[in-house]
Image 1 (cartoon, rainbow, N blue to C red):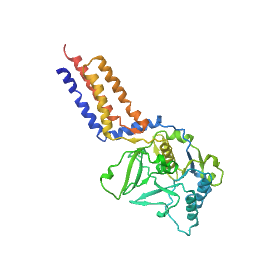
Image 2: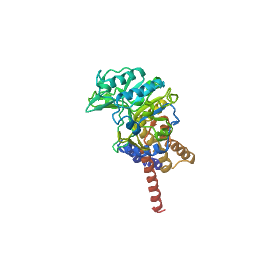
Image 3: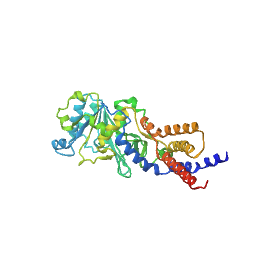
Image 4: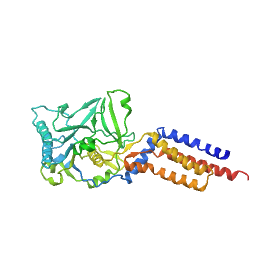
Length: 372
């Protein structure tokens, strides 16, 4: 009994290291590497989505409409074409911030097209602690305002998004969620995400975010099959309305010289492509939410105990096999959780495994050197 107790005491240092590693800043850096690797080779959702159509403001459209900015009457004609095609929603990822007033016929044409469609999503911006709303904050009929922020990590890579954000209070849904609220309102009420602690800190004049989610995996494969057309073809009536009916249409800039693309693990993508992909994933009822560190620590502790007991403690064979099987199943939990929409860090578990193996190897070498 005494020997077994001493053997069990050997597990205390690895377990303490597991807890410290899981609650430190190390998992964030490590998880970026794992996330990027998974994103290139794994997709937990069905990529054969048929709900999205992309309309590109591409180089050909810019040349046809005399460069950027395109006159708002052209955007009005595009929305009118989409209305005639009976699309389910129009996400127009262009910031119509300035407003020329009632004397500006282009503005009025665009406002009328938005009003008649009734299912338009427009982005708002935030600069210098001020929210910049479409048409200078004019009360819009037929449009829903959403935040379009796509925040980069410190290495300039895009991996996460926030379901809600805003100055002082995160009251604006992001573009994918706002689109879902029009395309499938029932689904829009059922979203997940890691909550922000801002609610416990009072109000702030700074940009506030809530409901953090990771960008799902598989955007490159999704875009390979998503139908897309040029804005000039849509405006000129050269897009078959049958391919647009009942679709969620995303209109946005597809020219890297005009709007820089975002870097993801799978490559470079425009903001509109990313919003469209996130919407398609939400429409399938999936969101990849980070988990609190305590759950990764708990998993790491359990795996470390299972493998540690097998490696460091003398037990019957049947008990060893039970712990090996249990530990093996627990090691697959993070990947299984990704498939249902939750991200658990592998780092605490790996720290425990490495330390247990080092201790086991050290004991073996010590036994080899010790006289019989």
